[in-house]
Length: 118
Image 1: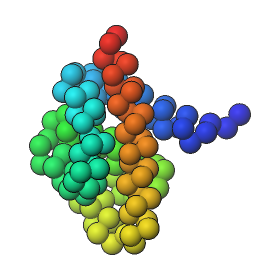
Image 2: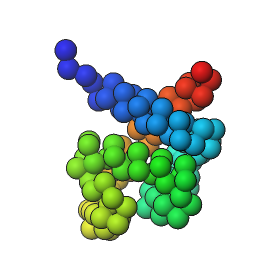
Image 3: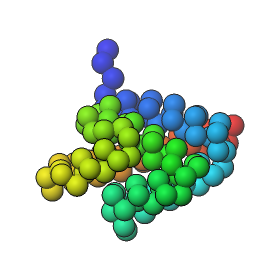
């Protein structure tokens, strides 16, 4: 039986939450909790630039999001090329990327919170 998109998002988020919590503990969970609101208020590109600049748990979460976007939408994985692709994306494609980012982050927030309780 083939996985649904929601199941794929959930599985990927679960795995990435495990990695993030192993390396950064509660910091990763806290960044994950605030990220959707940050994207809604500031935009995806500004948020990715902020995460990259902050480093640590912030950058790891940005890498996890870029990894999902690469797997699902074929955007570049690395920061520089990903940002360049976003600069060049049509408004419709960029909206699709942002929407997918928020959908994945919804899962990541839940998975990270659930695993932190372990």
